[in-house]
Image (cartoon, rainbow, N blue to C red; front, side, top):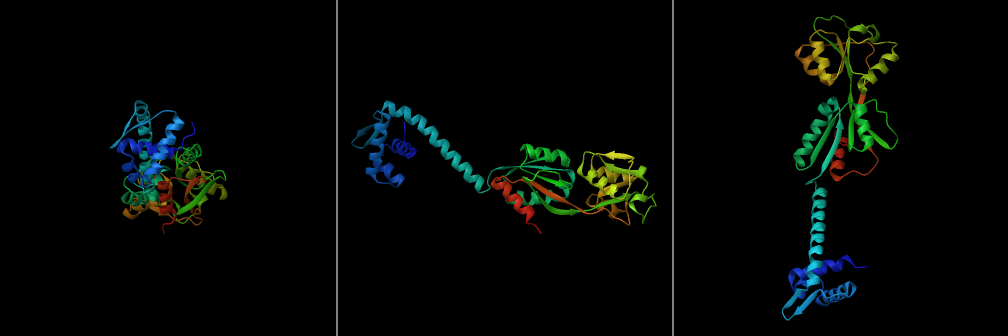
Length: 292
């Protein structure tokens, strides 16, 4: 049957009001238009849906059956419209983010705090992994966007947007007296580096290669805070993003080794597909990208 959805809405309203005139007032259309619609619906379906009475209408047995299903459908439509409106007004929704320890703590967290204050009903799911694993999740569509550190290797169908500069430095404990040297003069067997599966390790090794320097790390660790802790214990020379070491440097538990050829600064970047994003995701991205 080729039936206009509006006919069902009018049928639903008449059945609820039990009166064609009241239904017309509720729908903001004329009473004859409502009557004509009900007549057309009955003709198309092939049965009478209402019994006309002096003071209104009641459903026939066939009308009762149709009303049960139409009622459920219209309630579902109404719920869907309310849910959609709630998402458009940022009163509900979900954002899925992939981030590393570093990008989460020193870049994303302040934005999340600000966003949550404005839109507390938006659910935010964060997957915490090194950059290569995070990029893999993005390609699979498991997350909406990634916040990762360079280097970022990904296809052209993804946008890579730099949002914050970071600097990799060398630190050591107070028992170390090395200072004012070239990077390739650092004792390579005393280095403390992140594991090879991280983008930071890939970047550092590329910088070392430019200086004809081959590292033989004493320790390979999973997280940047551990790099600082190991340096504090005088276990070697850590190469770490400066944000992680600033508190320990300020306290004097570690010191920065001045090198004559410092490693080139790099970026924390947003990586996202070129597809349209949800309203909530787009809003958070806008806040991050347009921040000073």
